[in-house]
Image 1 (cartoon, helix red, strand yellow):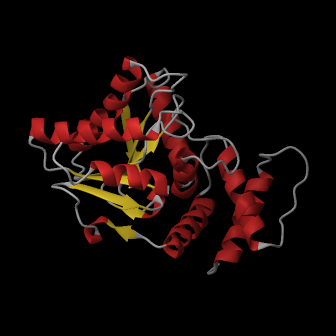
Image 2 (image 1 turned 180 degrees about the horizontal axis):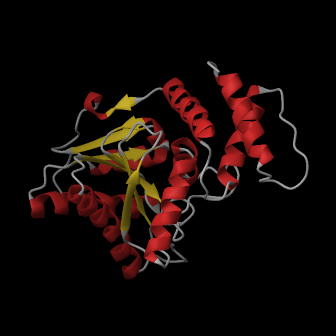
Length: 261
């Protein structure tokens, strides 16, 4: 089994045999439709062990898919100010110490088939091992994750070494002082957890700005100031990448970084 088509169809057959969706579903012929179906099946699969052969094929498939998208190594990036970088791209293709996932309080990833959130993308390309790892971690904790805290997991098939999962505040109406405090807490908790685990570089996504409705400009200001304060207060040597996907967010961060504020 040495090509992506065979791997993809193997994975589709095994997942369909598990009965994730109600009713009979056939495997489409179109390549993109197959990819969409595979992602949907991975998204809805409950946290449970998988057979060794499934994991072997899945891992080979996902790693090849990520490689085809193009992996960016943080060593190829240039800082915009000491220890801080700005990079626009797909965070699942970034090779660094850890990437940050904007998680929900269950910490199990997004179960909506093909959803565009970062939680969905990270769990999709990490593989089914990540959801199982998170489920076991949360079972030991015994309660949902609090806003502003962080957890660290392996990255499995992603090119980074670790994933830092943090639950940002959900903004309902106007941004409150508590919203701002909790968002700052997300950034600081991730940095502290990374350093406690020997992680030397962290790539932050735009926490809470998507489904959680935190205004992008305000969120970016909090993100940048919290990281700067942490580095200054602790003397940390950690390197931080602000990862953005949208042009609008890139403009916001570009306006904040590289200046003495």
